[in-house]
Image 1 (tube, one colour):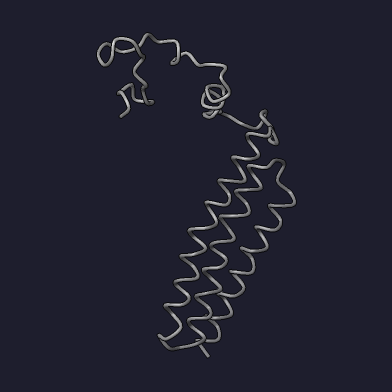
Image 2 (image 1 turned 120 degrees about the vertical axis):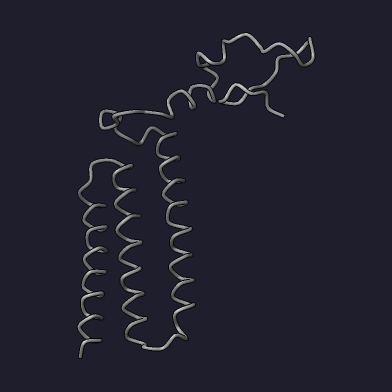
Length: 143
């Protein structure tokens, strides 16, 4: 009896999290918000479903498989969201008026060849006299 109540609560909570992810995909205004809605509640909803399966099964035989499923979801969901966000940012499919801070603007401008203030610094002393020393973001010469 108690096991059925716990399983029911876990399944309902997992379904609500999945529903929240679906509603967020439909209702949020831009790509970055939708990407967040697609990953965060969906992973938690899957965890609740897997916990319900583990409690319902009652043995430890299924737990390693369920943990593997959840770890795989934890590894793939953020990576796919990152790639979708990156592609959306580079193709300008986002609303810049909703961004409070755009940390990628300088990086994309440098990659496009427009140059950023860091690129106009004189090269660091040392190294070969005829060529500039490439630097990372920290100002330390790269190998």
